[in-house]
Length: 355
Ligand SMILES: [Zn+2]
Image (cartoon, rainbow, N blue to C red; front, side):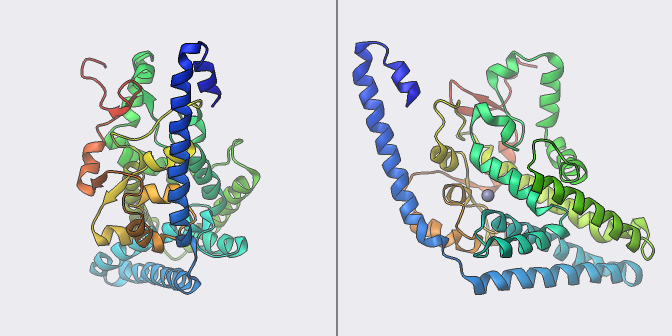
């Protein structure tokens, strides 16, 4: 609102200002209606939650134990156990994510316990994840708060043009497909989730330290029974595939042509949440694997909806607020969109004449 008042410095701007205020009110009403419509879907079904929680723990650790057996006695069996481990790593992440939003169980304690148990197997400390993911939700699409949003590094076209050569090269490198799918997962796995940081809150930092100590202790104990090569096969291979799937999915959630980026003065939380996130049209198996993360615009608008209710929420929502569906196959093409053009309000490739 402040920015609109500044705009109306001259009497002639008054009509414009009133028009803007009325369209803002209209926008607020539309979002209020959409949120009212989605609210009933935040109701949790504890039976279903228990089923997802216990079946995921059981299948995940059973497949890890099977891999431990196969790697010594029947290596061909790994072709079955490694994909199962990977799939249930994805499902563990889905549950950890919902716990972080308080949308899995009713109490914070139950979400804390379940989130920690799920995060343990995928090397993502729950309290750290909760902290950085909350920051992501609160600052999504805000050009002035990019340092608070742990999203893929995004520059505006003008920033890119005005950057030094080395910075431009670093940006191109970080936004390349190679980096996105090889280096980024490794950085997250080896550094981001392993190191404390002054910006994190104390709970996040304590959880990082405790997890690191626990993992070091477990590795030390297990190494007496398994070689590093076998441990790599049993656990690290599925972990890397899981991180690859997660990287692909994270990218698809906010990096699309018509996404939303605005400066602080014009940034609107609900607009950024809904229009800055995708709805991906994906096959059933992908929806299952990623816990309906494809309905990401609905999730950002109402993060209290449990993953297993997102599909029915989306059915009921329809086009209450209009949005475009993006086929899963288009996500690969979206990887060539690298800078935000503030004039066109589009994510665009780096212009050919710009190195
Ligand atoms: Zn979320």
